[in-house]
Length: 329
Image 1 (cartoon, one colour):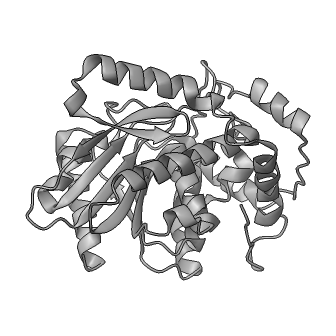
Image 2: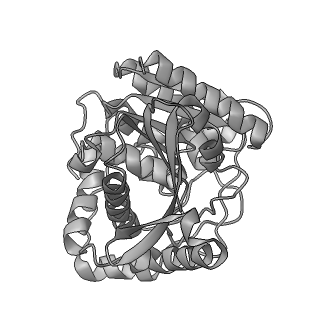
């Protein structure tokens, strides 16, 4: 994953240095190292296949596994294209804040929707995100400007150790965001997303029209990074909708605004009152960075009101419809 830092990025915060470790780790670990999420994917697939009829889902081949996906076809004569929805890591399709509810809303506007079960990412059984008030968030962002540059040197042995002994968050509130995951785990997760989305794109290649990815949480951050890197797998993606994007590692999480600004893909950035502390930490900066870096076709919109339900899903669907209409589709 190559990453070119802008010369006017704040001193001491080198994107190139921090993400160099991502590249080094990816060369150390072949994609066969899918054990990080294999158990979750297998459990999800088994549950779906055990409880649903075979005609209610379709299977795609991802590496050595078959993962079920759900396809809801457009309700209009002319299909605008396909929306792929991928939730946060380890998030069930039916969770209350999941944007998978849009699968029942977007087809009325001419979109075919592909719902993808989340990939697994072992964050630990007792993980708790820090709860921060507004003053603590402000201090955390100010503190980021004085962060010193860190050179990460990881060999194969230590990378393996990172996976075997992941760090977890303290349940107590803290002004310092603590690491909940290792870079080695994120490297593997990004590789899995590449393979997963590639398989989904291939499966749907017979459907004409635009390609839009809707993603949440860690998945949203990872897909944004892949788009910023102009990963060839995502060449046909015409727009991205992200919600609650974050990485549970402070130094990487603070890079998300710059990554968002460097994507050439049109982007709708959804925010909500139930976004976690990691995402809230970069929420304002994502909008500012996109504006100051002159990113074209970026919009940040708030999901106002109560947590996601059928009415909220309809509201978000109309937001996305308005956004795609603005893009001329």
